[in-house]
Length: 142
Image (cartoon, rainbow, N blue to C red; front, side, top):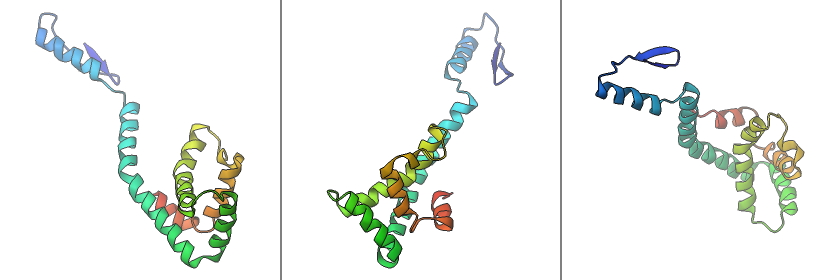
């Protein structure tokens, strides 16, 4: 008898070799629902990440053209990173946005990245253009 997720999924006779093979295959290939959910989450992340990244990049481009607060904050941050190209700073902001929740969740701390000076500076630049509804809309792409 094979029990998975608390239910009997297969009963076989000791003399039925093919049924035993099927039972063993089901036993070996079984994945708990938590594992399946995690794998599904990874697949959704793979599908959504490109669109989220493009949305954030587009918002940053728009802010570079029209948001003086963003421009000032970004220029200040750029001075901090004077050896980097401005496009690399923008990419760093995108990476920060995409990974902040992951780090905060992994380290079970809501302000993990706030303890890192570079992250705090990135966050101050990001908050000039990527906040409120803009942030929620970009990060909740179906």
